[in-house]
Image 1 (tube, one colour):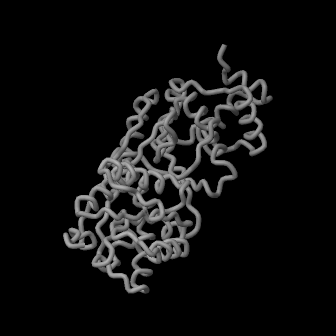
Image 2 (tube, rainbow, N blue to C red; image 1 turned 30 degrees about the vertical axis):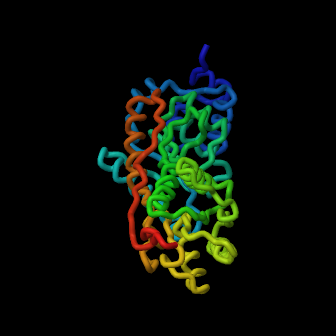
Image 3 (cartoon, rainbow, N blue to C red; image 1 turned 90 degrees about the vertical axis):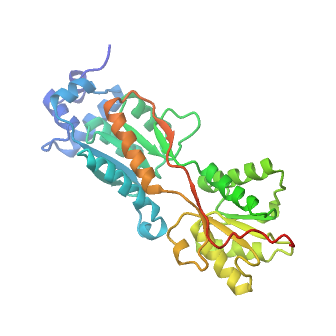
Length: 342
């Protein structure tokens, strides 16, 4: 027999009305009582009947976006705000508001999710850059709570997610260089265990294998995150006695560092080395010459996440998993056709 609100009230030593107020986020209940009731709900694995709850109160018409918002994030990861703007645009058009919740300020993101689900503080949750443990995933699935994860959480995950095909982005970059006649191609990228770096490099390897072109492992440089690490990686790559004649920079920051190091060493772009990178911002627009790049429309990614959330609100039982907008090649002056005499 399923657990009822009366069972929770009896076990916690409070009235049914008190439990109802806590579930609906109503004021007037002490923090100590709220914690005690929530602990009982968790112990009993109590989940309110969603149909009864919808009859008892109107939809909040609010979505929570749980993300990491530490100091200086606007400079370190401007894409995060492009994604948020895309989400907000889509939700606002349908009369929904978006509430930002900073996971960096939470002791446990899982506790924040449990609070939202148990109290029904929002109609759904969008996750961005926040790890989701098994217990939290089980809570979302068990309650059929509308959610979207930006970024694929795992091949066997039962969570709903939307992502950009980063592997395809790596393939597009490599295929462009190969089509331009380059065969000696290096890759400057982030840590080997960083997901986007791994996927873009994977796409590069796939393209090279399909073209029958050898991958020189010494030309694949993994760097720590940050400008200093990117500088060191570019320096190591350009100081190789047998260096590549084309380089894929795995991020804007890697391209920025590569340009600086190349200039200091008298290496000309693109005469001595061709360059391709990813994304328009934040550094591509200020580099000279403007680099060829694989553009990822993260604003569209945010809009897609918003659209998928709206679908989830109508049918929480749906398992929605999809790639969003495709990466697009923007060809500029840094990848000319390789001269035949070289």
